[in-house]
Image (cartoon, rainbow, N blue to C red):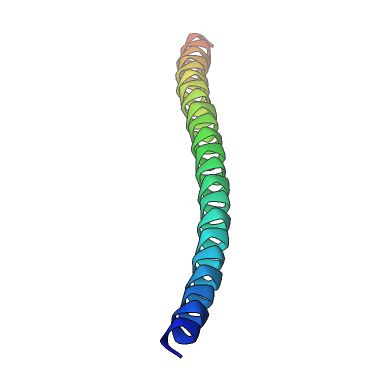
Length: 80
């Protein structure tokens, strides 16, 4: 009776162990996918930051050009 009980317990424990192994494998795959998504999101964020920096620099250049054009316009108006 004790041997039969031990065998059943062993079988149940082996099934639980296999389920846990499958669960761990699934979690590892999910973790790796999440890491990849995080890395891709970081790359996209960095690219967006670079584009934003470029746009800010371009905006500053355009503001400077506008100020120069305004000064030239005022100078031309005063000469007239």
